[in-house]
Image (cartoon, rainbow, N blue to C red; front, side):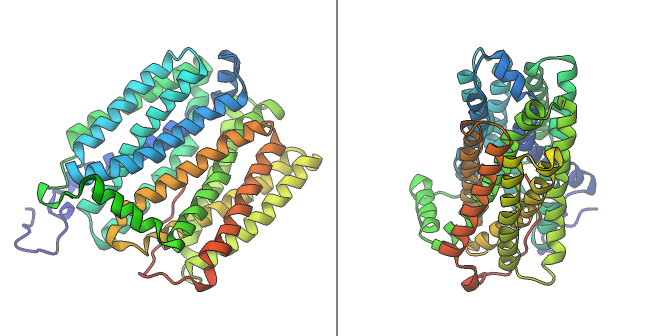
Length: 423
């Protein structure tokens, strides 16, 4: 029999639910967090095919990835406050409905401009799923239970990018790139249906914010006046830019330049994702001995060194494919060490507004990442262009860390528990 809140007021709302229902809710929250990575990564193997079919350029097609990231960035800023003011369910379901409609129209997109606009709407819908899932965790769980669940959800976010290009490659075996968006439509409809049937409203009217637009603007303004917080979220965003330079350029580099099939590319992409995820999990062990700012600083310095090696090897052609993969995967591993620690340090400074701070963090990460995607195409798409943007992103992150954050003076205002995160 379930305990009542009166009998034990220390129980979180989730602990009052029957075990089976709690498990179903957690499972659906995991599906929600997977929608964003699936939306971003499932169509990556088809980027060269889209370029040819729509008679456009690689840079223009990469802007469709930028559009997705812009939608994710703006959507987090929009949906976060809406879910605080009006509850969790309707912003969630409305956002996924937008994703479904955008996915349907992507199937019949006549040109790259329309496809890019629709990808922005897909990003908005995916942002709703991600933001509301995290908010529901905060509503339902507390203390260690919440921390453990956040870790599990972040692992979903890490595994999804491994599976997404593989799924996309398999879809391309029997249909065109448009079939990838048919699959995304089915996925979004399924997630919307199980969310409507499974997830309760977790934010009662008494706990909803009533400050409106002015209150939200005031919260964001307060965050933007904190130099260290702004510096840390920029470091996180620039590390994400290095990652998205790889994400946007890798399909062209490995398929067009090195002649890989779509399925071979999916395996290469999975290898990079495994390194990234492995680093985020290894970060938990490192935290037993070093502070988050020490790990972050060391990772950026090492990542800059590996990025320089990548630039030299791609420019000279030394080492061939191996000369690209090894330093590239090492850079991704260093990004995997930056990604948990920079956000954890940033959010530790604003526990009183953690939701708003997290929304701004996510928006900056996706927004800066969105800038990196078309740069690879503008510089020529090839391995050297990708390497240059990766190196430039790591150099910029290290510069912001030392000039703005000043890690030697950095002290977290609250105990930091860096959660393993991955794209």
